[in-house]
Length: 463
Image 1 (cartoon, helix red, strand yellow):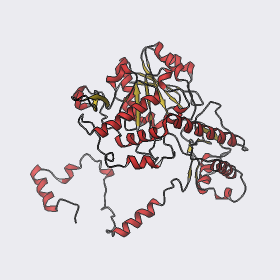
Image 2 (image 1 turned 120 degrees about the horizontal axis):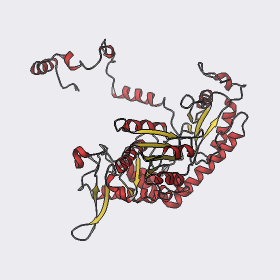
Image 3 (image 1 turned 90 degrees about the vertical axis):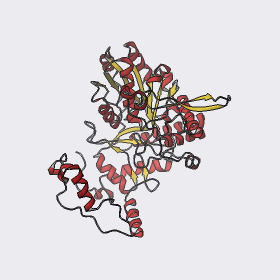
Image 4 (image 1 turned 30 degrees about the vertical axis):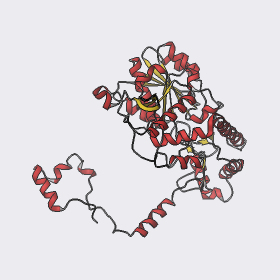
């Protein structure tokens, strides 16, 4: 069966009809980047051959549980109860379709309503919407909300925001005449003297992540006071599981709360798909991006659910829409709701406690290794930065040889971070795994022994 719907004759007929040559259709593509020779496409394979090829490619990936991962930075490897997969994969939920019609199935609407309710309770905010693409787009949409609400164009980043979030934020605001400024101390937390100096009458919002990208915990309440003194808003960027221990954004007087919800019952996969969380104070409800599902009663007095608000979307506001985002991550949100309902408040608190305690245990062990240190003295949740005595690239390469993904290499991403690694710990890291990580770190930097001879070419320890 041919997958090409057109013959050479049909193509010639189409070009003749529209009065064009083939070259006219690709005129916008610069000649220097066009393919000059025919593509080297191999002959077709049988089904068995394709399966073998795909499986061989898949085996090149290093994934849990074959390797032990200490990667974090916004995507986390948590245990997912089997019930999440079982309930979330029911055919009633399992669709890529994005529900936005008011008359969509009651079960779908109720699942979204429960997700909103759980996020609202988790964040202690007034209202949570039906989810977004990811945490990065949630940050950017929150900035648009703040700018529309205040009529101002200034955004101040308090603390180290995830660099990918910042890139998305800058992209969203590129055509908005917005000004982004930083109030970030050397340890990634907020430089409050700078923050107080930068925030003024043109500031729409302070964006404060806590924990920030380096894992440090910051003070939302103090930032809220700074913001509200000038009529600006505070957007708190949160880690949902950390709220089992930390003060939620609503109780810290935040106006907007956004976060990444992948860690709530969704696998890290290869970095996605992700799940954006978005909650606000009640007075901003009509500026929410995406949609909101509400609970009501039908003509017979029976409880019913209905898509209530989607005021920013283009099919409602037409040319006045302030956002084109219209896709709720409905399936991932449903899984998150199942996950949160299974754990409950006590379960999330216990999970947060476990992650925090194990991360601090590992940090203490690493700090005791010769040449290693944990450079930042700030309180942290489950991520922290370590500094190795040699190049972080050498250390991580050695760990990979031992089946350990040792963390995110910060070398080259931040000035002076050539030997620094961002390490993440979850409840999946047993004491045995943590102790093994410490042993392999020590071996990787011992400078003697068999492993030190296995340094990849092109990588060499820093002086």
